[in-house]
Image (cartoon, rainbow, N blue to C red):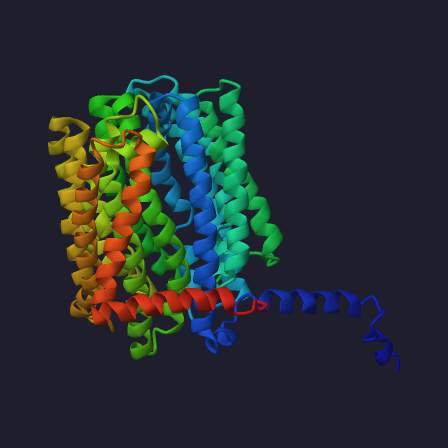
Length: 527
């Protein structure tokens, strides 16, 4: 007759059960995605606007830090860090093991599955930390640079933070909570930059760049746990993570090969030419690719969860994919044209004296940057459709070609390596697109049509920009003055061509309309 008392809200038995139920409900709302489908396009547009806005802020922060740190530090300081990060970044990818994207891409997931993946990521990050620390003497010996031992050990210690945030960030992406992700990224980057500048002002040299990495990692970890209130349980056996681990393993295999290929140029330059040339090469490469990353990364973070939700609807999938591809090409390609035409001016404004050789690297890398505006496109197809094996096969084909090109190009210095990168990357991307489109809702011809107008418009803008620069060469000495005139001329030529062609006019109008709509749409509460 005391049964009713056992379930009363104040009983000692009911309170733990109620708390457990509340935790279950709080956790489960991070996994369901049905509520996203009713307004998927609206969420994607708003998410794209938020993410692009955050990338614009991050771009300003990064460019500002580049301008400041390039004047406070030496090229060799940047070269030392590039020597280490070429190796540490390669090893660090294993802490994720592709499991974050497995959480985003999978249709249905459970608390037990994500908890198990969380602990796998933590274990992997700890293993990576110890592996990198153990490699410190070997890295220093390879480059004949004793200072790299302590730099490597310091960077290894920051890797543990990443394992504790992988699944939390994946859940934020799965729920398309792009505002929360934007807050994390901006705050952590800003904090890391502040640490670097403060240390540089105290004449800490290359340790300032180590401080930036450490500060960013720590702030990122704290904010992710604050903004995503999911908390992991204990790992479980037989909870159905086998397929997710297999999918993640395929992505890791691709990332392994791709990272090795994309960073082999740093290793070749550092080994053959030293830290000074590597500092110039890596800074030129990062500056040239920075605007493209500011576009591709945010659009990709929005499109992958959106396309994953549309994988069973080929018509909507194709339409969403091609619209996004056209948008990133329309925005990214003219940026590369501006950098190519104004290479000397960009180096003088952003880096200052002592970096003049970077202008030649800018121009040699420009073809790779131009096609790189769409380098995420084949990856969108493979990941959202669960075809990680296609990426691995592509990487196996192109990795030896690219590395061989770097070795040959090094005979002609850093400019030769940059030319080798452009040639091998253009060929490799064409192969990747062909492989990714096979048995997918999107054809190569669809991609060609979506890119035709931005390519033609960029060529017209390129010609107009060169003509304007030639006219100004003898009249305006200031790099800032030339850039202030030539950039609007390039933009006018590009937009004018797009507006003159009916099909591209429709694409441009849609891009502007979606941008305005994203600014006007009310903010919605996310799960």
